[in-house]
Length: 213
Image (tube, rainbow, N blue to C red; front, side):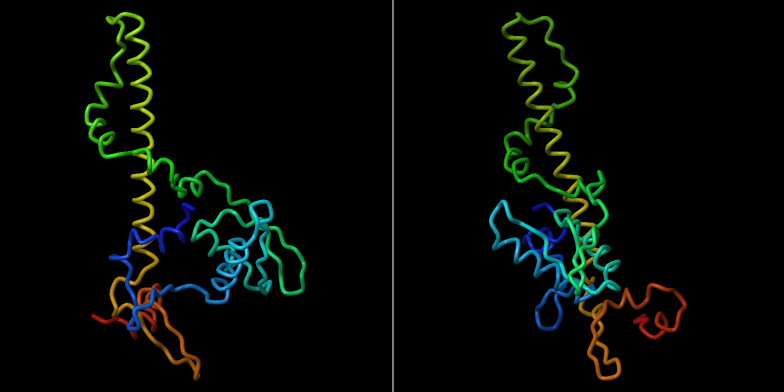
């Protein structure tokens, strides 16, 4: 939960995700690596809580691509890779603070109700008040209320930041229009890529060939 992969298929961004001519979500990623990620998630989904072991299996030459894809989708729960021969290869620690912020707490989302959101409109006043002029019993009660309001505000701001990150990811991961999805025939092998991917290197032959201007 809370990964960019979950955000992609959460339904929150359906209106912004470009689909191909067959109404399928198009992902411009390595299909072999993505297939292994989906297989691993499927195995974990059918495993018991205490036995959610990674079973990624990939050619060693594709490990950097797989590592990049795990970072890209912010999938942090995979402890190791295993190549085709069965040799375990430990992956780099992905528990960085920047990646950790990609996770969105479901509890936080449930806590921030419309009523609480409206109450935050006066948060500046709540944060600066000390309540010293009130009796101690009333002061303690209002201080507790102040702490609750601050916690709600922090949760709301955290959700806002994560939604902004999700939106940026969706804009990057999804084709911007149907014209951005290019079907290729490379020596008899069908391939599909985003036009923007083919044009990464400006003024290159690929850039000029697929310039739709």
